[in-house]
Image 1: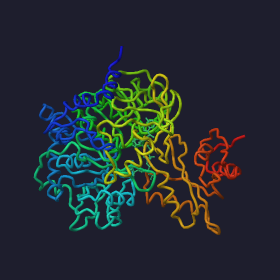
Image 2: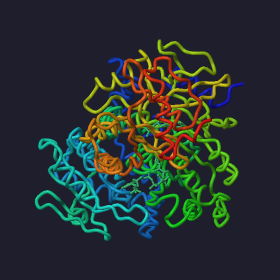
Image 3: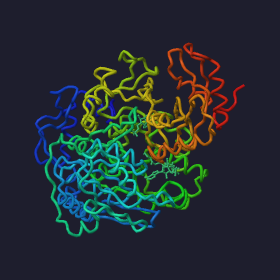
Image 4: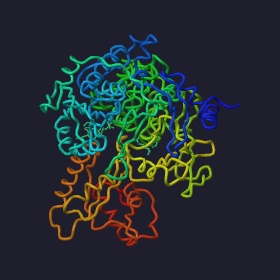
Length: 636
Ligand code: COA
Ligand code: AMP
């Protein structure tokens, strides 16, 4: 007998039209689609072509019509400013409509881009939904990125307007956002700069306004006329979210409107098992995909109450804050990254602070963003007594590729596995020639095309890079760039990235981008950046520098300079705090840096001396260099 998961999975693969058309019936459409899956322009598959929809309508107005106007839509909980503010569906809709009016007043039209560079405040959510309301395309940039990264995104998205705030708050530090924004606009191409910036002034820091360009959020809201939802094509873009690629140039992941509403609303019940009226909390940031999908859109599509938390798992004020938020707001389901739990566990290993709160409302914990290590899994299971679900996904996919779908069927958990492919994801493990490998064998994790609705249709203005990055290597499949295996029971294990992406505290970063920065230092001849294991953050980047011949300056000074360069060009979020000078890097005879081997040495793992190595002595030198900076415990 098949269980509901197996039935749903089979149907999603054999009859995707029927499966997704049924899910789409739970959403509001102005005009029904002509085709569910449109494969007329392979490999660019589109969903619900001919359909007309509005994302903001589905997130807000729809629920007001269903009688949820007085229900809390958003709870802003900010221990760093000692604020708790609740917005009902009606209140949030009114604010969003008004900000949509502000944008319209500034000349923003359907298809125009609006860049949002904001901390975790309600205005960030309002700005996103306001864009959706008028068919503008938002692009949220995470606050931890430096001006240079912001400028790269401005150049690519060419926003008509930027919405920002005077500052963000990082535990006790106030980070002024406006000077970073001004610098980024200054650095960006003249033709890409916004006409206007709307700035939300926070009481902790007053931003200096640029005359003629900058508009005060509150003043603009006071004068604006509310704007109504406009129908857009299901295939029109809702947002662009930039994510790390293998170079300093980030990839602009595009999300469409129709497929996104349908898929995310479906996941709320199927994966997370939450119903309208439930309270859902994704402790992430609106700058990441988790924030887009599960702070803002998914919970609101489902008529849930969503929590916007401006704080950290520890230090705001202590390691009990997650339990305080869960009990105070009656959270049913929490989603965060394993690193948050490692941070809590480090401060409160026995989970004593949990006992101070009534968590009877709490039903499930979902973790993603990086590998869930068994210690963290077991700790969370034993301390919380609810299902702890690892699920695997990417910015590109927009929702989980693999999960234990609590709303369909709960499978027993296997440590280290995000369980099974979610309906819609036809996952395979293949060898370099695209042939599926046997159960248990490691290979490339790839998804047979078409990808389900809600996943990226392309990269912003760059179909070529989309094909090159994801579709070229394994014809007929989407390359996840993760390696792993599927065991005999169909459980998936995600082992490692196959490119230079690393995950630092659940944040996706490119070591290649960091190498580009280091290579710019005048004393650096050659360099490598690797992600090495870290107890708290999962991975942290470590830099290896080979200096130009004749450089006699202090190594410490050069190291401090490169660390500062990464911080100011990529941002503090890179957590690039360790580098060391080496005489040379271990390489193959053809000159390729042996990154995998260096990484194994750093992580103190077994390694074989590669047959192609140019000079085996370089490995010993590497061992010594790593020991000096606290990695690679001495081997016998
Ligand atoms: N704006 C400005 N600066 C930011 C920022 C933001 N939005 N977010 C992070 N930073 C800064 C931090 O202040 C820190 O700066 P520092 O070097 O001056 O200390 C740096 O970027 C690194 O931040 P982070 O990696 O978050 O480290 P942390 O030590 O501050 O916190 C954790 C570590 C584990 C507590 C935190 O990363 C966390 O809660 N992560 C889990 C939730 C999550 O965000 N997941 C994302 C995907 S689901
Ligand atoms: P991001 O685009 O920031 O969501 O990062 C996506 C990458 O994070 C994936 O390609 C994986 O390498 C990693 N990742 C996300 N979730 C998991 C998970 N549950 N297990 C292992 N790796 C994960």
